[in-house]
Image (tube, rainbow, N blue to C red; front, side, top):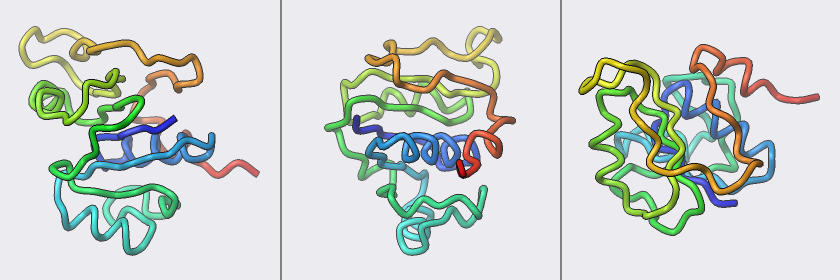
Length: 138
């Protein structure tokens, strides 16, 4: 499957690695072009989880994110979720990996726009587990 992971913080980085380990194609959409260029040139995220190998992912700025993907995984703070989802270039299903409370309702994470189409899609979990989630399997 082809995934667009929006958000290149710890959680987006870890989730991208998990998807890559399972043989999925990953496009990692970063907030800035500079961050995308740094990941593309080094295969590592210079700000978060620097030891995680992202060389098989395609890093792009969010403005350059492709629309032709199977699933969009959104790993951004809850305060940015609505704006990010509204600006997505795709009508693909959205898997919310959002942390924090919904700023509109002060309840749990904002609602997921659509369920992931496949049971092989990893379940949402806490961003605190990002280091453990992306450990290389021996």
